[in-house]
Amino acid sequence: MTTKRSPAAAGTAEAARIVAEVDDLTWTGQPEAAIAQATAALAAGGLAPEQEAALLDLRAENHHWRGETEACAEDAQALGALARRTRSPAFGALGLRREAMIAFRRGDIDATLRMGDAALAAARESADEVIEAHCLATLGFLRAMARSDPESAPDLVRRAVPLARRLRQRQAVPVGRHQREVAAAGHQQDAVQEVPRVVARRRKLRAGEHLPEQAGRKREASLALRARQ
Image 1 (cartoon, rainbow, N blue to C red):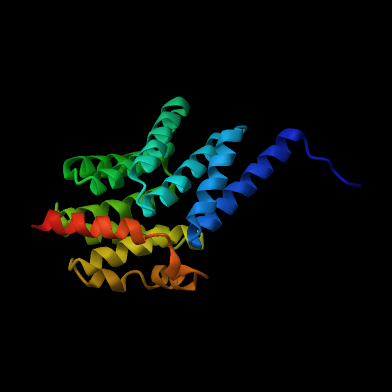
Image 2: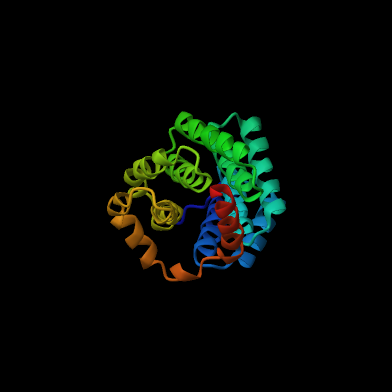
C-alpha cells in the first residue's frame, strides 16, 4: 500500500532537497549555480524559517567569496530581519557572523569585533552546536587578522574543533579553513596539531581546492596586512 504525502509534507521535502543541493553547490565550488538556485527558492516562498535561514546564509557565503560584498550584506540583513520576526537567536547568530565578515572586508575593525562577539553570544544562546562552531572559528580568525587580542584567537578556534568533528563533512570546511589561517598568522602553531581530522575532512572534498574563495581572499589579505601595520 502506497502512503500519499500531504501537499505540505511534499513541499517541505522539496524545500529540504533544494537546501541540500545549494549546500552541495556551495562546497563544490559552483557559486553561480548555488546563488541562482537559492534565489529562485527564496523568491518562490513557502519555506520553513529554518530553510529560509539556511538558503540566505548559503547565498551569502557564495556572494562573500565572489567579492560581492553588497549582495552579502543584503542577505545578512535579511537574516537579521528573520531572526527578529521569529525571535530566533540561531538566525541572529548567522546574520551577525555575516555582518562581522562584511565589516572586516570593509576595514571597520571595531564593528568586526563587536559583531563577532555578538554572533558568538547569540550562537551560545541558541544552543546550536553547528552555528557555535562556525562563530567560534570566525571570531578567532577575525581577532587574529585584526591583531585584537590575538592571544585568544587559537583558543577560540581550538574550542570549535570538538564541535566541528561532529558536523557533517562540508559544514566543517570553514572551521578547518579558519583554523589554518589563524595558525598561518603566527599565533601558536600548536593549534595545527589540534585539528588534523578537520583538515582531513576538507582534503576529502571532491573539489576542495576549487572553492570560490579567490576574489574574497585578495581583499581580505590586503585588509589583514593593513590591520597589522
